Each structure stands twice: as structure tokens, then as C-alpha cells.
Amino acid sequence: MPLAHEEHGTGPAVVLLHGFPFDRTIWHAQARALQGHFRVILPDFAGFGASAHLTPDATIDDMADAVVALLDALHITDPVVLGGLSMGGYVALAAAVRHRARLRALMLIDTKAAADTPEAAANREKTAAAVVASRDVVPVVDGMIPRLFGPITRERHPEILAPVRALMLRSSPEAIAGALRAMAVRPDRTAILPALDLPTLVVVGEDDVISTPDEARDIVAALPNAQLTVIPRVGHMAVVEDSPAVNAALATFLHDLPTPRARPIRP
Ligand code: MLT
Image (cartoon, rainbow, N blue to C red):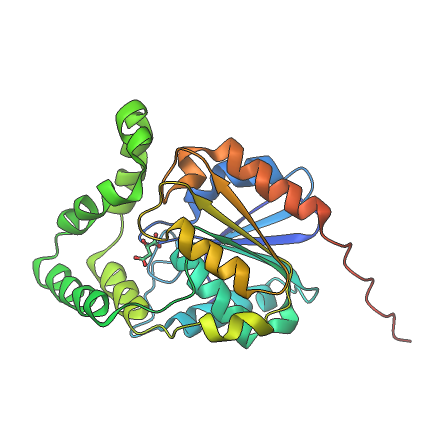
């Protein structure tokens, strides 16, 4: 069954992949901003949002294949722009390796190319086992919240945190555990970056402590055709902490992309 998804607008396809543990709705501000010129497609990864059915033991590569299967189901054969927030960025990079011909450009938002350290991977495995055993997602969610948002958002705009926390709490223990295990075993993608010729926009919150500005700069330096936008005064959740700034960066990048070549007409 293809991934559940929402579509907004018409035009060249832009697919936005959510992070962990969110769902497609994390992109609503971006969809509203882009739908006037683009066909914005927001999938839910398996187990999250309306894609309730979990694929057990799915890897990040499997998640990339599922996104391409959704494009197939939608009969989208022209290359798309693929954007990913954090875990969605890991999936976008996997798609760039596995399905290069289906992509026109990448937008990597508050994400990284490196794999987990052994300690981080072991922690994820421990957390995955604990959340399945306890069936209580609150400790995982509340453990993440302080690191997701920048200090300025936490102090001055606490109203931004509550809806994101509520969204995270809707995730099932199984979906959380599955995604944690997928992220723990994901490969390091840094070595493939120099050969990845897709036009790429890298966006990072200035105060992101999960995927740092230094990591974003490293990605841009390694890629042959990439540009960086640092969003001031926000953390990992730049897409909700300062959606107007993120939307402006995405819109400028998308409008500047070379027009997709017309497909050859076969008799
Ligand atoms: C995310 O936002 O998707 C996660 O923080 C990514 C991660 O835990 O590596």
C-alpha cells in the first residue's frame, strides 16, 4: 500500500519528508507558502500519521524506496525536488543514492550526512527497547523537546512547542522504536556527497544542537552544487520556529532551479 500523503497545489512536484517522530503535518506552513507554484506532496512514513501500517525492520533505504513507490503510484515520472527534515533528510540522501534519476534537486533541512556514533546508536537501541516495553512514549518525547527548539523559541515563544509535542505524542511505541532502529543502522553518506551533482539547498537553524550548523557547512563544502541558508535564532525545528524564513529560502531556491527539460515526445 502506498504511503498516506497530502497534496497541495499544482506545478512541478516538491516532495517534503518529515522528521522523527512527526508526520506530514509538520510541513503545513511550507505547503501553504509553496502551493501557489508547486505540487507539494507530503507523505507520512510507515507507522506515522495516516500511514498507520508499520513496516517492521524498515531501514532508511526502505523508507526511500517507499517514497519512490508513492511517486510511481501517483504516476509521477518527471524528476521531483525532494526535501527532508532531519530523519527525512537521511531518507532524501538515501533516495539520491538509490533513485538519482527520479530527482531534480534536494533540500536538506536540519539534517546530517554522517552516521550515528556507536554511543548514539546504542542509545537509540536502548530507547527503542524501553519504549516498546513500557508502551509509554512520553519519556522519549519529553527527552527530545529541549533539544529540538532553540533557546529563544523556548523562552519567548513557548506556544510553538505545545502543538509539536502533541503531534509527537500521537506516534505509537512501535513507530518510534522502528524509526530509532532505522536511524541507528543508517550508513554514513559523507563519502557519496562529492559525486552528488544535484542542485542542493541546505538549511539549518543557527542554534540547532541535533544537526549543527558546522555539520551543514560540511555538507555544503562536500557537495559540488550546494548552497547554505542559516536561519538565525532558531534550533532544529526551524520549519516551525521561523517558518517565514524557511519558506523564503525554499521558495527562492525552487524558483531559481533550471526549468525541467520537456520530456521527449515519442511517436
Ligand atoms: C529528527 O528530527 O528527525 C531526529 O531528531 C533525527 C535524529 O534523531 O537523528
